[in-house]
Length: 69
Image 1: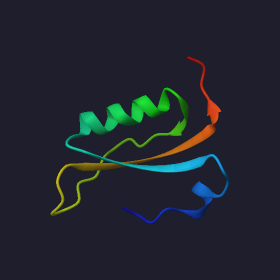
Image 2: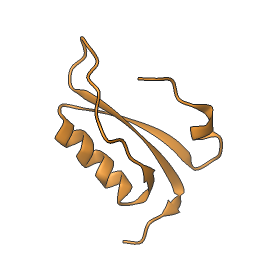
Image 3: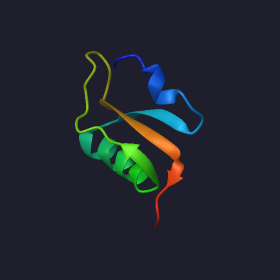
């Protein structure tokens, strides 16, 4: 994965989440759970790292912005 951009964590409440999962379905389910609670810039695809198990996904959260249930 690319290095984390300083702008993505420039203020308190901003977070970069790297998800490692066995498969795409699991990774996207975790991302969806996060997006149901906080403002999220979601990823639209996972990546596979040669020699490492499973898939990876990175999404960006703003935990200052709670979404209505």
